[in-house]
Amino acid sequence: MRSRKFAILSMFAGLILLLGCIHYQKSENLVDLEKKWEENFYSSLHYTRQGKITFYSASNGGIEIITQKPIEDFGCIKCHGSTKANGDPIITENYKPDCYDCHVTIGDKVEDSRCLECHARQRTEILLNLSDVHSEMSCKDCHSKEDIMGDGKHYPTLLKRDTMVRCENCHEYNGSAAHNLHGKLYCTSCHQSTVISCYNCHLESAENHQKRAFRAIEGFEILVNYKGKVYPANFMTAVYNNKTFVTIQPFYSHSITERGKDCSECHGNEIIKSYLQTGKIVMTRWSENNKTISSIKGIVPLPENWKSALVFDYITYIGDPSSPVKPEPWNWTFVKNESDLMQICCAEPLTDEQIKKLAKEFGKK
Image (tube, rainbow, N blue to C red; front, side, top):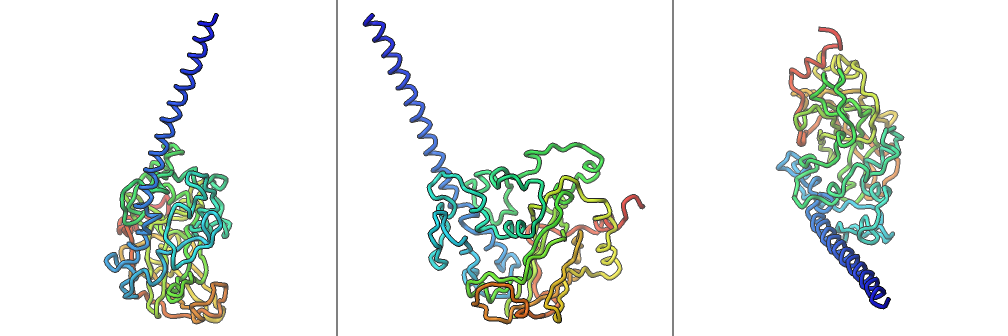
């Protein structure tokens, strides 16, 4: 009897020891994994802010050509939320990205509200009440830890990195006639209702730690060639000492629709008809009397001569650039409708052949 009890106790002790070893091994693996993510973070775009540096730099045709100043003078790479995750206020001059921008304690769950503290365009999409089939999902349902923390490599911009977010991760290519016909279009070219842009960035305010633009605009989508596909893009305009700048870049917005665009939205639309007749695509118009901006609506195919074709009305802020940002249209005024510098980042305009195909109304030869 005593030997039986001893055997049971020995088995029980062995089981505890085995579970302890498994737990220890899991803990060791978890520590190694967390260490890996922490190391990755310091080379990630979230930490380096290299995307902004690349876009800004003179070597990439950026607005540094106009400003003749380092990006640090404009506070762009010190962009941050109002507080750390635990609520502590952030002092811009001392700010440096770290884990506690998002985490109260390392490894805790990060709510979407923390993402939106920094990702202003995505916050603007919500404010504009853009409808999206993924609206009930969380950021982390699509954005993997590798997307957020990095993969240990340095990238010049997110546009040069193969993100883990892909439509085909969840959606199967169904081989329909529309899909087969548009095999060289990226999914969002048809299944995205709009891109958004903040018009237009006032860099003298940025020098005074104020992120000021006139207002957000939407209701349009530019088409470019990117990574072998026709991809949606947007533009961003900026003014510095009355010098004007625009950049065109591939862009994803959270305005995904279940149904794709109608054929007539892209083929033979009024924008391409006007371009073929006039050689111009008027992107924005400013009303000095009403202090309002109107922007193009619809699909904008970017032609090879886009630098001479696109027309923007540039405006500048004439109030105190150090004053807090608030709606004050009376303090904005027209500068000119010429672009002193134009940049396209990581993409190419459509070819003449692509423009000719889009010029034809669907079903007509």
